[in-house]
Length: 537
Ligand SMILES: *[C@@H]1O[C@H](CO)[C@@H](O)[C@H](O)[C@H]1NC(C)=O
Ligand SMILES: *[C@@H]1O[C@H](CO)[C@@H](O)[C@H](O)[C@H]1NC(C)=O
Ligand SMILES: *[C@@H]1O[C@H](CO)[C@@H](O)[C@H](O)[C@H]1NC(C)=O
Ligand SMILES: *[C@@H]1O[C@H](CO)[C@@H](O)[C@H](O)[C@H]1NC(C)=O
Image (cartoon, rainbow, N blue to C red; front, side, top):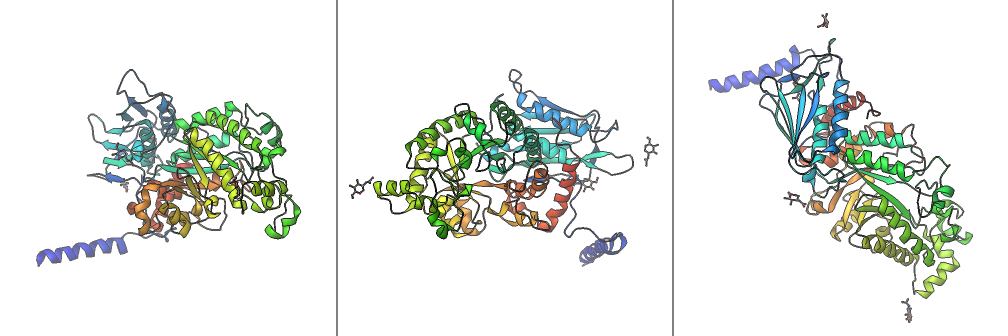
């Protein structure tokens, strides 16, 4: 009885303190629950502290990130970029000297292969553990990881754990953390950029890669050519960019691509190129009009699309030269690409164009096809075979499935029209396809207000029925199509909105905050990103 009274009293007091004695200020700017200082975005799997309020001051000026050598003969140069980058970020926080915590020690348990490119076949590749605790004579911060990729994710988390007391003589702190263990939910967490509708300079792409690293994104899907321009410089077919790029300068030479690939690699990001065919090929057509199907006006009433528009133009699958060219071209692309995936597009093929072409009509008679969809299927199968025979996994936008074209079961289906839980998304999973989700994450679509909330509330596993297919869901991508986006606004359009996507793809669903609470943590992360300089090396 007495105990019970005490408990009631305790709650009463607590309520009293919260409700009346503590000044409530002049209203909070956001609903939801304020996130504690030094919170992390995306939210980690597990964070435990016996004394979570114990804060160690950081000696920013003397701070060092030290890689403890597991095997002294194999130094991990892959992490040189990150250790320099984050050491500079920490030193740039504050000119003040003094503080208790002056280093982060990293230990990698597996091998660190110097020139390795990330593959991310298993979420365990990115896991890590962080410990910040009392030590003698001063507190210690330790980061354990199996791979350098896990270490990269852990360094980012450590940086986010550093918070400012915002006092006149600003001091930075990291709280005691007995164990923070983290691992992503999905292996594939991407951003799609479109450098065809507007050319994106190398420096802009490097900034995007840095911001992606801050968000633990690990895939840059590069939609590099389209109707509007062909900026990829091919060694075998130099005419493609000579005639297809906007100007002689707005191109991606092999050297530029190599630098971007290296920048991505040291940030733990893979680059997946997209070469979209048989639609969206006016860029190819600038130098190779012979590969295109001429469209005829008669179908104007069918499609309602002006056949003279580039978006109505397709390759001509009745022309064997198209396949000979594509085989040679894709071989070159794959020698440039360091990845086991290649995005083949296959979207928005304007079938009425084929329907009116005498050449395609003759080809259909020859092959006993009754529908242009069969022509599309024929093209897709041949291109997929080329790529698959080279050991590469093809990715395709969902359109062929929508058009009733049977895709190779090895193809990853990238959804942009159907949300998770909609019939075609479910059908694809039930038919055994691996999928990627982007439908809810079109960051180029402008809407007034906090668009990130919609992104945050969309989950690739939309309902209980999809849970059993979770292993087929590789992850997803936030897309930023380039029609109204260029180097002047792409960063602000991508971040922090797509940070919501980063958390959906990283954080276990059952750990996710209510959106209103997440808003406070995102707000804190936004400030954390703003205090950094994306140009920093
Ligand atoms: C860190 O400690 C400070 C007080 O020293 C506290 O205000 C803050 O909420 C703590 N942060 C976390 C993430 O626990
Ligand atoms: C990932 O790797 C771990 C450890 O090697 C293993 O136990 C697990 O089965 C793997 N998961 C998948 C999906 O391959
Ligand atoms: C800030 O530091 C300066 C120089 O050390 C000192 O004179 C001043 O009193 C400090 N201000 C506060 C609010 O602690
Ligand atoms: C088309 O059909 C005819 C008659 O059934 C058949 O002889 C021919 O082999 C078929 N052609 C193809 C390419 O399947």
